Image (cartoon, rainbow, N blue to C red):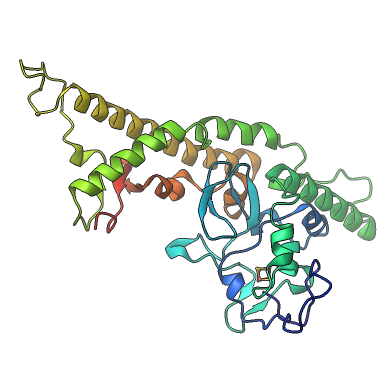
Length: 322
Ligand code: SF4
């Protein structure tokens, strides 16, 4: 993470001799840093922008310092990977792959300055302290953008007496971001989706148990023997599909969970388009503004979203059945 000699900002005073970063870039390949209050100055100064960030929303699974995946109690904002984190590649977008150098080294965030892989004392101290939210970043970015626009206008005086054009997207103070983020959370928040997620997880586990060798994506709830239509139970209490009342109730719960989750996925996609259209947000800013798509995070429930000509469907991911 560090490419020059640099004592971590929070290193213990009696640090041993072998504390220099060797600049291998290994920690930068494990993911960008979470951002803290002192990093807001980097947004005000224009060294960092919302498009460089990714939000992990409250309730989303994130790897803790001990490597365990746990649901986040509150949202966190971090530097994003170079591309959508596909194939598990979380390499920080600012890492130059060719020489493992940081392209914003002089203005890197606090965690990057604190992290030394052979002595994690400083990063552990900093880890959960004063983490910022999306609204903190948006306020700092808008403040900096306004100051820079004003300074540029004063310097050139070319547009003296003319009204300044309103800044676009994240810097536009007219965009009610708090309301927009709250409206998205209301339908797509992980707390709201928790019961649905639990039902999906149970269904996925059952499907895995029934199909241990599945190598292709399997639609949910296709392998749970859902009846096409409710049948009248016979004297044994089973319907024509062989399910008893408990089985039918479980299948109905899964069907409802699938429908509810897919509704949320469709809403999530539509909401993103609306935010681009109405608020002028750039595509690169969406994973910061609204977090990762539900389609991307469905894996935390053991399922995946597959796009078809008829819209999204839920599947058991390939390979997860073995
Ligand atoms: S900002 Fe620089 S030091 Fe920090 S993770 Fe990214 S590449 Fe590494």
